[in-house]
Length: 154
Length: 167
Image 1 (cartoon, helix red, strand yellow):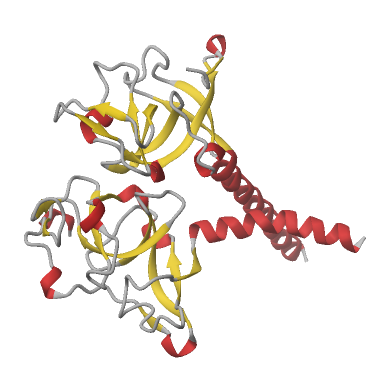
Image 2: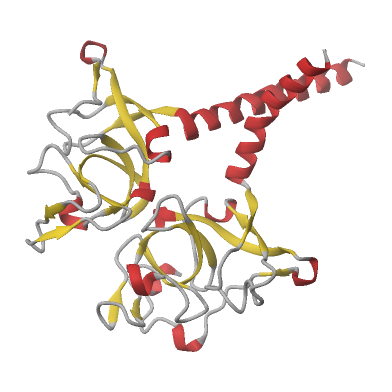
């Protein structure tokens, strides 16, 4: 009898855990999540170990604009995320670093650049990035607490 | 009372359903003729395939796999193609900018089986593995077409040189 009660309780607990895991998955995948960024490429706007609040709605509905900071999957390693600023949209003219000539951003792609242009591996090296790789748009910084700022304006 | 119960179960069931579709896989309709003759052999009746999300959870694809990916030209569109070459391979192209292309790191070369009637890497170049959405595993509908989609490449489309570190 005690065992039956114990097993029943365990299953109930697993059910709740599963439910909450699924709700969390949907929120993080479709609404917004928190990202910790590292590396020097977005200095001075962002520094290592800042925590950012991002939203997944703008990329899903194609509401990206020039100047937005976005989180995208790295084109050369899909398991790694990059945090850069969109500097050009399809049809805009941009100048790459190598080869150093101006080119037009093709349809369905964006041009990503880090704010720290001297120390950033970005579109100037690997070219335009497909919009399908963009995961979310950064809304604001939530950590450290004394540097909470909105990051949606250029 | 009944309405309340229905609402409650929908609200609780929806996230579970979405998570299941996101992590395990889902069934999708194949449109177009680009993968003939394996998919949609007759244009009149369309095939439905099971797309496994679980199979590509760590972006591991193999040469010959049929995969669905986000179109590099239009992020709202998904396309279904066959993987021809992985990173480090050299592929002989059919009408791309240069005759031979070495696939960069983290990219793959995808082609439709219906050469000449497909919009694939021969037009838009190597695609990043981050765009891979799922792997097509079975044809599930119509019932008489039920079969496993095998990983195969015609000899003529094998990469010219293969990067052995991928295997």
